[in-house]
Amino acid sequence: MLSSLVSESKANGQYDDCSSKPKVLVVDDDSSLREFLEIFLAKEGYKVASAASGEEAVKEVKKGGYSLVITDVRMPGMDGVELLKGIKAIDPGLPVVLITAFASLDAAVVAMKEGAWDYLTKPFRIEELRDVVENAISSRQDQNVKPIETEDKVYKLDQMVAKSQAMLKIFQLIPRIASSPSSVLITGESGTGKELAARAIHNLGDRKDKPFVVVNCGGIPETLLESELFGHKKGSFTGADKDKLGLFAIANKGTIFLDEIGELPMALQVKLLRVVQQRSFIPIGGTSPIDVDCRIIAATNRNLEKEVMEGNFREDLYYRLNVIQLRMPPLRERTEDIPLLVQYFLDRYARRQGKSVQGISSFAMEALLQYPFPGNVRELENIIERSVALSTSSLILPESLYIAKHKHGKDFSTRKAQGQPEKYRLPPEGLNLDEFLGRIEKDLLIQALEKTGGRKTEAAKLLGVNFRSFRYRLSKYDIN
Image 1 (cartoon, helix red, strand yellow):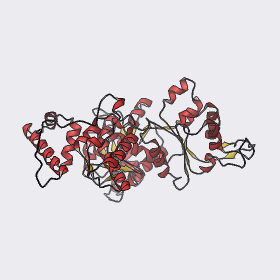
Image 2: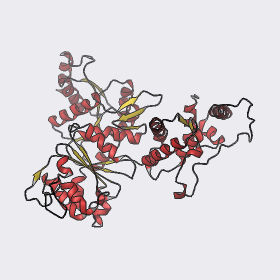
Image 3: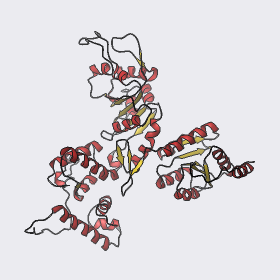
Image 4: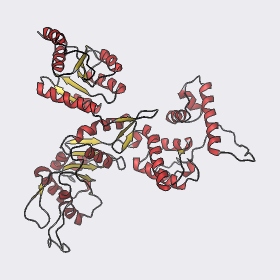
């Protein structure tokens, strides 16, 4: 029956190669389900191709042109999760939907962490499949994650830039979060960019033209915080000489970002819970509730689950805020972003300070690549801002860096080059120091590669640098 329907669909031209139609790849070792999906998708107006195994699907994806991949999880050989990883290595922005008859929360979590667009369990409803396919293809057509045209693939989302896979997964998730009205909890260490992520969620969502209100729950005295959040009526306490509109009221129809939510006192947690549950609040001194419609995004550098267990944070509020969780990775987990961020901040502060600083020396960059950054991106930004201010040349040198060596017992800013001659003579007419040092460095890099027959790992060891730093230097001097 299915075979005849497929034949009929082909005969009716539903598989015509029309370039205007999105192309979907169906992957399943079960021929009956594969044919069913082919028929359904063709009738929905999509171009359809199919593969009976993960290995075959990888070859198809490499050809390009696909808007979506739908794959079964359980397959012999390469399973659906392994296929997902392979697809993301080829085309990080290609949506992948996984289908399985073996409903498992663990499998769903693994799939979503690896970048799956969605996860369906058999038996699924046609309407559910249709919605997932439409949304996934729409995200592919209107992707907000776009490569900046540089030699290396760099991704930009709203005000954030990155090239690491860890951040790319965040960039792919944020547009999906933005289209949902659910509360979001952003976790991560201080300085990882939680507010930037919150702003991106707001700016890419339906409320982008409405207010985005930031509340630092740890930066406002407890005695004033309730009034700041919910407002007060005239005469409600000493000094309340007029009505005050609270930040929740100001954020109405927009987004309120509650930073450092873990610092919120227990009494205010109760009142916040009412806002989250009932979308209303009563100002201090008021008698009537005020309705409010705002998207709530919270952020914390604390382990809120631990705070709940210790009785410092309400469990019911935690689950209300943690509908969707977004974890911002620390900079030490995304070190490949450091050179990109360094240049980004360098350009910014060179313009602001009217300096002609254009780049950073390899030794200074190596010092940054070796440093663990306890303060994350915020600390890196401060280091570059100070270095630009102190720089007296067009290049940031190691001595211009101020890195918190007292925190780690190691001076990361004074690494010295190894194996260079001890003394050079300065010509009577002088020289361009940056160009001179650059020629020496490039020559040593080439010599190291020649001695090792092009083996980069061994060449890096000859020069006493780690592989990441060596690769950065090769890119800097365009050495292939």
